[in-house]
Length: 211
Image 1 (cartoon, rainbow, N blue to C red):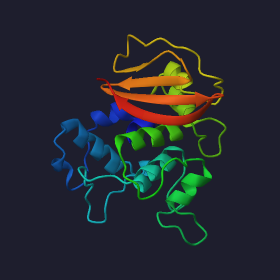
Image 2 (image 1 turned 180 degrees about the vertical axis):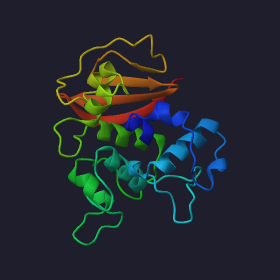
Image 3 (image 1 turned 135 degrees about the vertical axis):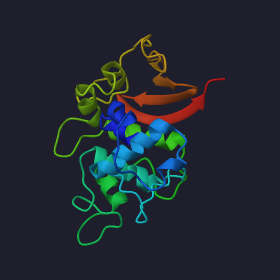
């Protein structure tokens, strides 16, 4: 997810890494190992791993860990703009996320796929550091995400109320339903992400599955 949010997914999938986390072979997905190598050799993306040199790819992620990665995607730097636990007049991860408007999740609550969707959408619609442009603006410029989808979800800095859109036949794995009854549904595989919208602003997220 983090390489996709920085526009580097295609490069990372086939990255010819030299260094990697010591436990990268624990990941069965071969291209996933390439992504780990990319993250290892590009620590500025926020994945520094654990002090013992591992990545622990099969371990559960916490809300705090994922929010930290969203901060990095927005251009904030650990130990410069924030630190993991705070101190020395520097906010911790959760204080920093709150200050930039990432407020939907709370530290310590279970981090599920639903929560991942929520945190990602929050970040995509948030302004990047020292910018009036959102993360979605940045990724649309890079060609990393579809501008029609980003506009439909109100993630672009100049987006007004979402307009009805038809599913894109060229992107069957990710489509957007018509804007009806204050809801927009995003379909990705078997997961449906429904956004309830009130006066052009997100009111509620909910996630279901296709029956």
